[in-house]
Each structure stands twice: as C-alpha cells, then as structure tokens.
Image (cartoon, rainbow, N blue to C red; front, side, top):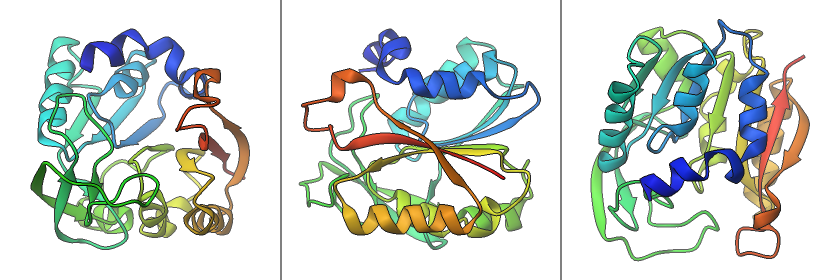
Length: 223
C-alpha cells in the first residue's frame, strides 16, 4: 500500500497536485488525514510549511519516517491526532491496520458511505475541533486545508467554523461523497457560511464507474 501510494502520486489525484502547485511559497498547509504523507511531502518540496495530522498509528509511523527520509522536519510537523466536531478522548475504528491503509473512522465504525463495518482494531485517540486546536496551541494559521478522512468531513468542518472564516484561509480541498445527500449538504453549507466558494469539483477518470464514482475532491476558494 505505501508503495502503491508513492507510485500513483502523479495519477490518482492530479487535481490535488495542481492545487498544491498554486500555493504561494510561504503558505501553510494543514493536511488532515495525511496517511503516509505523500501530499505533505509534495507541498514541502514546493516550499510550503505543513502541519500533517494522522491518527492511525501505523500510518503515523510511516509519515514520520517519510519526513525523516526526505529531510523535511523543518518543513513538516506531524501530529498523531484526529479532528471532529468536539474535543474529546475517543476511539478510532480501523477496518485494517495495514500500513498505508485508509477507510477508518473516529467515534464509530462507519465507512465513507455511512455504512457500518466490522473493525479489526480499535485504537484510543485524541480528537480535537480545528477551532479548539487553534485556541489551545496557537499553531500557524492554515492558508490552505486539505481534508480527506473517509466519512466525517462534515463534522470536521463544523468544528472549524471560526478558522474557516479567517481571512488568512485562501482555499480548502475536501473529499466529499455526493451520494450522501444530508452530510454533503451540511458540509457545503458550513463552507458557504464561512465565505468559501466552490471553485472546482473533480476526480480522476479512473474513478468513473467504480464504487468510488460519487467521491469528488471539492476545492473552495476564499473571498
């Protein structure tokens, strides 16, 4: 899986790479759901500072190793925490503990479509709202946020309403399932109320006709 993620970097989500390439050199990216860090690394090579967040322990290990191997510790700060709509100690339900794996969820064993799954492992996790994380630790404010967490994007957005409304936020990329009409509408409403407008909705052609055909990367731009 980690090798697959490296080998498909240029083809799986070309719209994400184009988005990163549009950043100004001194911009700060928050990569929420960074997995093993391929997009965090890409942004760091572009000259950006990155805060990378990944709660799965195996993926966090590889994220940290990838930062070390690429000598990127001055550019990328990695945190083994999750985000949601409240700050609390929580359980992180994992379908698989395979390195580089995804499709896990914080708080309940439901997948990106809202369907229950049989978890193979339940990991203790620290969950924050974006707003509480900013208040508690005063990190660099994100100029760009990437949110790809397989199911609770709407909750994460709800927990970051104040940060999303900050004039320093230039853009947000969030992967959303257009087939989940209620959670999709909720996510779109939060972003709209924050003054962010949809600029692009796209996925690679390989997803057309697959079980992931309703998943799109949505890129929102600030005023």
